[in-house]
Image (cartoon, rainbow, N blue to C red; front, side, top):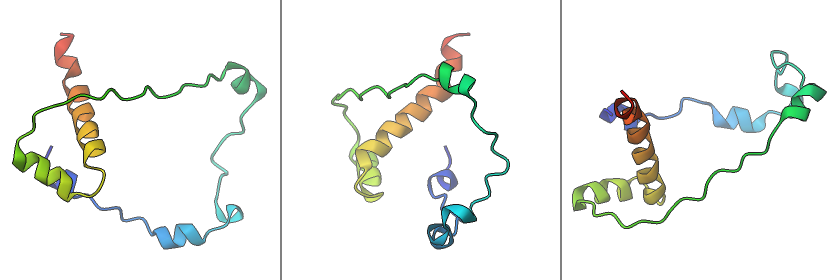
Length: 92
């Protein structure tokens, strides 16, 4: 992952989005959900994370902590991205 990917800032005008009412949102491209959809729908809850202790070098930990209060969550996401990117190599 390159440095630009980690510093990607949203270009969304959130103030404009927050000011919109439900009627302002164009949903014409969303097909209606049928009874068939709901008869086949299944509730899937995310798995609870497992708590582990991992040794991390001080520079890496400091970088994640400098990103804000969600350092542990960001580290978990980074590990998931890494694992997903390398899964294909395991099954070849």
